[in-house]
Length: 284
Image 1 (cartoon, rainbow, N blue to C red):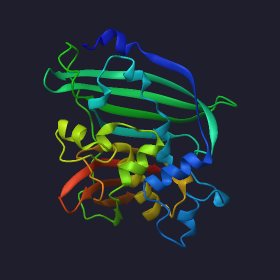
Image 2: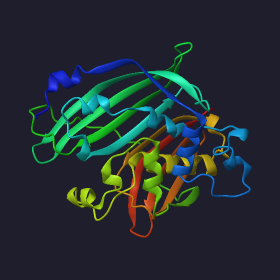
Image 3: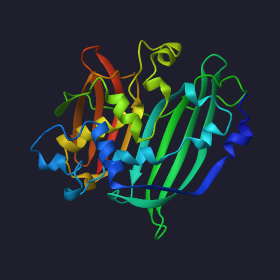
């Protein structure tokens, strides 16, 4: 079914209840590699309820349901994550109940053989007092939904990585079963577990979730720049530029200019930049 541009642009959800418990944030933290440094109490606080649990800011991306696009007729099974951003107005608690507003803010036609480019904005508010916690921007490529006659994509300004050697580097390995663990946090797309689905989409094997790579990048910044203080992060934006395969080592190159942290992630074994134009803003 072809995309109906006017209908999809008018689609929005308001006051959708979402919630999570401490076991959800612990499972997510394990899924992006925390808890492997035994004896590191700063890291243990993300995976042990008696010390928190602290909630990674990137966990907010897991609170976004895919119903908005699934009900639109788009082929979400062949969707790829292009970019993810979050602006935090207060730290995420260890558990909570929230209300979600979600709407399509941009939809472009890349062509019949190239797909559609769509951006969704999500606002998350505390249910108890209606206070805004964060706003997220998710941009996806709908690989089979182009050629619907919509507008072409507008030029986008990307955050520039500084033209100097990285100030810091953080290497974080992924496990062969990383996607199998991470999918338990809510993203059950078979692309990340089923070899036949992955090959049908042009990948040699199942790839790691974009939201998992996003969380690993957040883990790297927290560990290297923030000494695991999650309350310092005010925004965290990335552009996905290449797939990650479970088992890859992800090297995060980091530049800090006062409260602005620039970063990119690469897989050295393939010399592939998997996250580019990363920008994190810290509290002053």
